Length: 98
Image 1: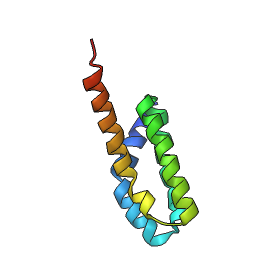
Image 2: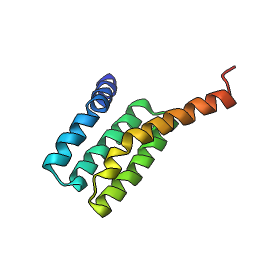
Image 3: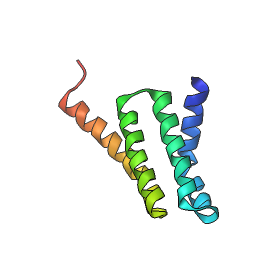
Protein backbone atom coordinates (compact mmCIF):
# COMPACT_ATOMS: atom_id res chain seq x y z
CA UNK A 1 0.00 0.00 0.00
CA UNK A 2 2.90 2.37 0.71
CA UNK A 3 4.25 1.78 -2.78
CA UNK A 4 0.89 2.70 -4.30
CA UNK A 5 0.74 5.86 -2.20
CA UNK A 6 4.29 6.84 -3.16
CA UNK A 7 3.55 6.15 -6.82
CA UNK A 8 0.37 8.23 -6.64
CA UNK A 9 2.28 11.18 -5.16
CA UNK A 10 5.06 10.88 -7.73
CA UNK A 11 2.58 10.69 -10.60
CA UNK A 12 0.72 13.71 -9.22
CA UNK A 13 3.93 15.75 -9.02
CA UNK A 14 4.99 14.76 -12.52
CA UNK A 15 1.50 15.25 -14.00
CA UNK A 16 2.15 18.63 -15.70
CA UNK A 17 5.29 17.34 -17.37
CA UNK A 18 3.59 14.13 -18.42
CA UNK A 19 0.68 16.01 -20.00
CA UNK A 20 3.00 18.45 -21.76
CA UNK A 21 5.16 15.64 -23.12
CA UNK A 22 2.21 13.36 -23.84
CA UNK A 23 0.19 15.92 -25.80
CA UNK A 24 3.27 16.74 -27.89
CA UNK A 25 3.79 13.08 -28.79
CA UNK A 26 0.41 11.30 -28.64
CA UNK A 27 -3.23 11.91 -29.35
CA UNK A 28 -5.18 13.33 -26.41
CA UNK A 29 -7.31 10.18 -26.34
CA UNK A 30 -4.36 8.07 -25.29
CA UNK A 31 -3.06 10.61 -22.82
CA UNK A 32 -6.54 10.59 -21.27
CA UNK A 33 -6.02 6.95 -20.31
CA UNK A 34 -3.00 8.05 -18.27
CA UNK A 35 -5.19 10.56 -16.47
CA UNK A 36 -7.75 7.90 -15.65
CA UNK A 37 -5.02 5.59 -14.35
CA UNK A 38 -3.58 8.38 -12.19
CA UNK A 39 -6.97 9.28 -10.73
CA UNK A 40 -7.83 5.65 -10.02
CA UNK A 41 -4.44 5.03 -8.41
CA UNK A 42 -4.83 8.05 -6.15
CA UNK A 43 -8.39 7.06 -5.20
CA UNK A 44 -7.34 3.50 -4.39
CA UNK A 45 -4.27 4.61 -2.45
CA UNK A 46 -6.15 7.00 -0.18
CA UNK A 47 -9.60 5.34 -0.11
CA UNK A 48 -11.13 8.64 0.96
CA UNK A 49 -14.49 9.70 -0.46
CA UNK A 50 -13.13 12.99 -1.77
CA UNK A 51 -10.60 11.21 -3.97
CA UNK A 52 -13.23 8.79 -5.18
CA UNK A 53 -15.24 11.85 -6.24
CA UNK A 54 -12.18 13.36 -7.89
CA UNK A 55 -11.64 10.09 -9.76
CA UNK A 56 -15.24 10.20 -10.96
CA UNK A 57 -14.71 13.80 -12.10
CA UNK A 58 -11.50 12.76 -13.84
CA UNK A 59 -13.51 10.05 -15.56
CA UNK A 60 -15.80 12.76 -16.93
CA UNK A 61 -12.79 14.74 -18.15
CA UNK A 62 -11.38 11.61 -19.76
CA UNK A 63 -14.71 10.95 -21.47
CA UNK A 64 -14.82 14.53 -22.77
CA UNK A 65 -11.26 14.25 -24.03
CA UNK A 66 -11.89 10.86 -25.59
CA UNK A 67 -14.99 12.01 -27.45
CA UNK A 68 -13.56 15.32 -28.67
CA UNK A 69 -9.92 14.20 -29.02
CA UNK A 70 -9.00 17.56 -27.46
CA UNK A 71 -6.31 18.19 -24.86
CA UNK A 72 -8.15 20.92 -22.93
CA UNK A 73 -10.04 18.56 -20.58
CA UNK A 74 -6.71 16.96 -19.66
CA UNK A 75 -5.32 20.32 -18.65
CA UNK A 76 -8.30 20.87 -16.35
CA UNK A 77 -7.44 17.95 -14.03
CA UNK A 78 -5.45 20.14 -11.57
CA UNK A 79 -8.47 22.47 -11.42
CA UNK A 80 -10.61 19.45 -10.51
CA UNK A 81 -8.22 18.42 -7.74
CA UNK A 82 -8.18 21.96 -6.35
CA UNK A 83 -12.00 22.03 -6.41
CA UNK A 84 -12.06 18.75 -4.47
CA UNK A 85 -9.68 20.16 -1.87
CA UNK A 86 -11.79 23.32 -1.62
CA UNK A 87 -14.87 21.17 -1.04
CA UNK A 88 -13.11 19.29 1.76
CA UNK A 89 -12.04 22.56 3.35
CA UNK A 90 -15.56 23.99 3.09
CA UNK A 91 -17.02 20.85 4.64
CA UNK A 92 -14.52 21.06 7.48
CA UNK A 93 -15.74 24.58 8.24
CA UNK A 94 -19.37 23.50 8.13
CA UNK A 95 -18.87 20.30 10.13
CA UNK A 96 -15.72 20.65 12.26
CA UNK A 97 -14.19 17.68 13.99
CA UNK A 98 -15.20 17.28 17.62
